[in-house]
Length: 88
Image 1 (cartoon, rainbow, N blue to C red):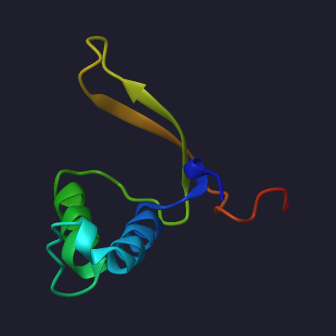
Image 2 (cartoon, rainbow, N blue to C red):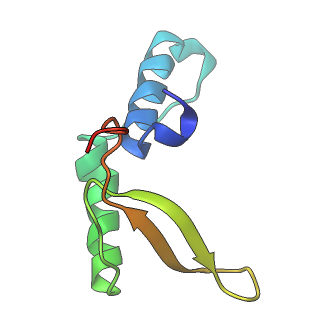
């Protein structure tokens, strides 16, 4: 799949597989638990605590940036799930 269609979880999974195949080439520190439980769920909890709404299955189409370009102020999202492109 093209890079823009790969989720962060899938990319991390691919990296983990690659790192396992080339352990001698990396100074790797492995997670204790799944990437979802260790990274994504705590991150989601913190974002939601700040009032950020998470839209499961939505694709980010555009990021709105502050006038100074230093922060994201909004996201335009499509509720079309990755892999369902072209379906009604």
